[in-house]
Structures are given as structure tokens and as C-alpha cells.
Length: 365
Image (tube, rainbow, N blue to C red):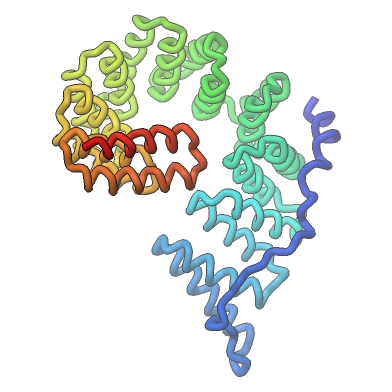
């Protein structure tokens, strides 16, 4: 089955290996003619590694790009640039550089896997599947490549192909619960809730103390409207791992939906206390504070949330809303304009519309 799919899919991906990549380096980076190229290359690679270790990814990228000018046929340099782009979640750029690396080294299974991962993250499922196919052909024992393949095939609604990919995974690593978690997550993403419940119940029987699988099963049950069974699975998971914040977050969400706001708020606050960067908990706190008309508290919450996820327009929008309710119009306008700019950046039509509507309401004050 997989071999047939490979034959018909393999021609679709690498149409762009011959494309050139412009690097746009400034004149300040021109290599001094008197300095030996090898020494300059070593210096650049050393600088790049140091920047990467310090998580200064843009400077690391710049150093490696300059190194690639000196050593144009070094696939590892291009793959290093691609990896750094993935750290910035710039998967489009990462895919370009993994392709560049593969144009030099066509037999590197890891490069194909990484390309597939990057393409999957930008929603290019067809080409991601083809990259994963190449990866498993070169390394038939690559569990991660089969997992990636299964995920993108599920997105493409190729359930037979996905099932075969996961059979290969289970045959290679039958005692790895993460495999079952990924499959369960994929079924949930596809809204195949009945199938997910059946699959995850069997997985939980095999790994009864795995809280991630129980959390996924609880989610599937809740989506199916089986509230009692879903809550039961969450309580079991909570007993197994009482400090698991994902479980606590799911329980808080159920309480919030059931309008038990005080109990939900306690849990959200407890999560944020243990993990100051847990944005979902702050979102929950903010929602409840708005529902309870605690606009001052919500202002503080959304200000904190902006520091955690500064490129997300939602906290700016709700911060603007809290300022509006407190009749602090200038601050509301500033926050909403920032939200609008981010919504425009992400081409979010609904966000643009609702932000513009709220900005119009400010004119009435």
C-alpha cells in the first residue's frame, strides 16, 4: 500500500531544489580579502554555535548564512539554518533551507524528516507526506517518520494509509505509549470522536497509568457528550498524577462550562501559580473575571498575558475591552490598535471585524 502511494506521490515535492536562495547580506559582512577563508569559516561557525546556545537565533542564522557563502556545498550548514528557523517557528523558511540541504545531500533521511515536519507545520500536507515517504524509504526503522506520515495522512483523510503507517510504528516500537497518544490526538483533530474513544479505551487498557492517554480519552468522551465518563477519566488521571497541570486545566474547563466559576477560577489560579508561563490558565482567569465583571482584575490578567504571548492579538483585544468598561478610553484605543495590527498581520478577518467594531464603540464616549 505504502509503496504504491510512494510511486504516485514522489514526483510532487522536489520541484524547487533548483531555486536559488538570496541571502541579502549587508556590506558590513564582506569578508576581508586578507583573511584566510578557512579561518573565517571556522570563526563564523563558532559564532553561530555560541549564538544558538544562547538562544539568539537570528544572530546565529546570520552567522550561518554568511558561512554558507564561503562553503556553498555544505548541506549541514543549510540544515543548521533550517533548524534555527524552526526554533523561531518560521517553518516556511525552514522548509526552503532543508530543500537546499537536500539538493546537496539527497540520501539524508533526517533532512527529509525535518522537511516533512516543517511542511506539516505550514499545512502543506501533500508535500509533507512525500518528504516523510522519502525518509522512511531511506530509514525504514524511523519511528518518528512513520508517526509524521500518519499524522499528515490523517489530515488528508487517507485513513487507510494512516492506519498502515501506524501499524509500522507499533511493529517497530510496540511499548511506546507516545505513539498511541499521537494517533489519538490525530483522531481528535479530525473530529473522529467515536473512533478516538474506541482506540483510546484500548490504549488505556494497555497503559493504565499513562495520564496523557487518559486525558485524551476524557477529551474524546466529553466531545461525544459522555460527561460522566469523561469526568471519571479525569479524576483517575488526577489521582495518578495530582500535579499534572494539563489535567487540572481540563477539569477547570469542565467546571467553567458548567458555570461553576468560583471553583474553576481557583484551579486556573493554582495552575498559574505553579507555572507563570501557562497562557491557557491566564486565559481562563481572564474569561471568568470578565464574566464576573471584575474588570480591574481582568486588566491585570491580560497585561500579564501579553508579557507571556506578546504576538497573540487576543490579550490585547480583551485588555482593550477591560479598559473600555473602566472608561479609560485612551488606554483602550492603544490596546485595540495593537490587536488590530496583529489580526491584520495574521489575516484574521473575524478578529479584524470585531476589533473595528469595538473601536467604533469608543467614539461614543
